[in-house]
Length: 242
Image 1 (cartoon, rainbow, N blue to C red):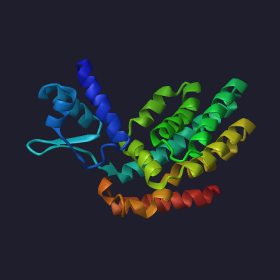
Image 2 (cartoon, rainbow, N blue to C red):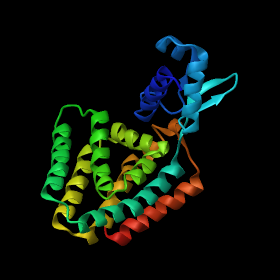
Image 3 (cartoon, rainbow, N blue to C red):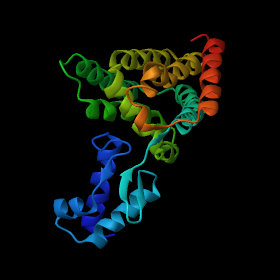
Image 4 (cartoon, rainbow, N blue to C red):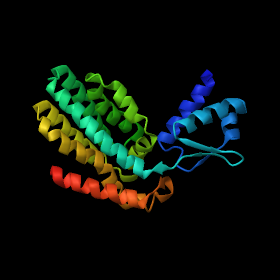
């Protein structure tokens, strides 16, 4: 793909993930051509690439739309990420992170704390800081490829942003990060799973009925599947004593 084609792809990808383009919203091929001063084949290549990663659906003679968020995929990614990331963090603790590493994490946390004290939180910058904190222990345990793979699930990435803008639950997120960092600093590996389980599942709890009410048009819901995961996560949190 040409440089301009890559620019179109990256720009639209970012806008869809950050919800500047809403799930289900139409994306004009002609409008995109005008916005970037390019021909239709260039835009169609970018659209195809977006379709390949699950962010866009292109229907001949009907046009392109941003895909809906499949809630069952969000539940499954949270389940997977809890299992994988808790192991990575416990390995990170066992590696005895240096004071410099801990200071890097503390610096990230201080930036999060400063952001939530503002009159209006910049959700995109908070999203970046949140991701950077979790990415840190993956990278230091030589698991950067696993982190990139986890980030490739566009259902979950958009759900995270929707949690930020829909619930404004920043204080809860930062509080979880504070506890997680305290656990790492004190070397309490046995506390990782309950804290991380609560942290990763909290977005679903915060969103609650908003998924079926205010943001219903953003989601593909499989009620039987969703009921299973809601009950599973409830029992998991109770079992872990979160």
